[in-house]
Image (cartoon, rainbow, N blue to C red; front, side, top):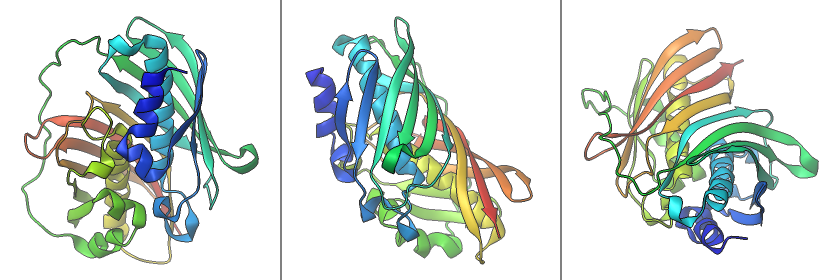
Length: 282
């Protein structure tokens, strides 16, 4: 097992905060174990989707970093696709990454997230890039919004969610299919390299996507879930406050396609972008 990979997983503050550990690592596969914790759950002890995404991307990075080598960083997720198959209710999960193909700087990986007795929770396809020490290109600026502050009816409610509040995520604006969420820099969301952990950034993206849909429906006797997320991370997230801008791009009855940009709150430069497919139904 690569010491630098184990150290990255087990010693990153975000891993420690949510409870991720590296359970297995070979040239073909890596497994992240994550015991159940109420701090990672939604009401009813259902695991927050951002936690499953965090375990999946961490497993993929562990495998990619191991097979590419310690001198190939910094690393970031070129492409991320997760489909949620079932809820994890009060149970430990494991995210097992398997290498499909290794190139000079790219690793193509599939990840299965499972619960008790091997129950399928999520399936992912992830491409991880090692930058080989090269400088980054200048990143585009997020479209942003006009800066109006109106947390809407979900402002206080998301603060009561232990996983969301644990990340420091707060609602700045929510109205008519548009949201703006902020995630201030905090040590508990950090990567061992010093910036925000990709898992925390993806959790912010996931949360913004969900909130877009709720801004349309309002409160009611609804059920909701995230069937799928597709995202790209442009580079390792910085040590900075992050802001997420979400917008309902398309709605078809109970289904919502929500476009989200995650940016450095200070510079406006994009960190990640993606589409969150969300469902709200009676």
